[in-house]
Amino acid sequence: MDDTFRKKAKDTLHNEDKLKYFAELNRLSIDAARALLERLLREPDISEQAKEYIFSKERSDDFKGYQAGEEIGYKKGHEAGFAKGAALGALSVIGTLTVAGLAFLLNKD
Image (cartoon, rainbow, N blue to C red; front, side):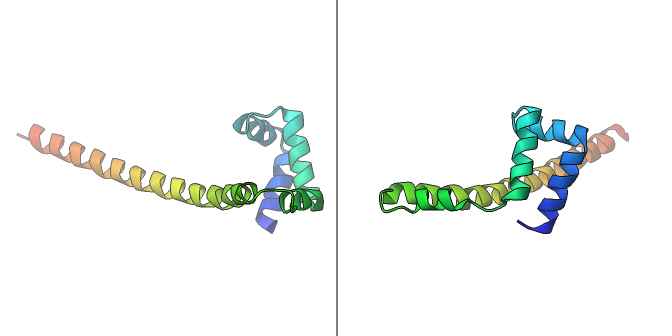
């Protein structure tokens, strides 16, 4: 876990309003949100038991592929969603300014 995440997690734990917002955003109770953040600060990486379970010979290749897809897909999906939101926001601003400019020119007479 990087230092930025660790700092934000600590800040959220020590600020009741931020903790409530984090819990609401993730559809968790406040106690569950607090426990989750505390656990992430204690054990930021996947546990050895989880690694053994996921990569066990008993697990199918489909299951392992699903886990890898979840991890990589989340990162790519977040990045793509941010880029799409930024592009749509820019287009909206340009469209609004164009309409406002046209309305100004039409009403100028």
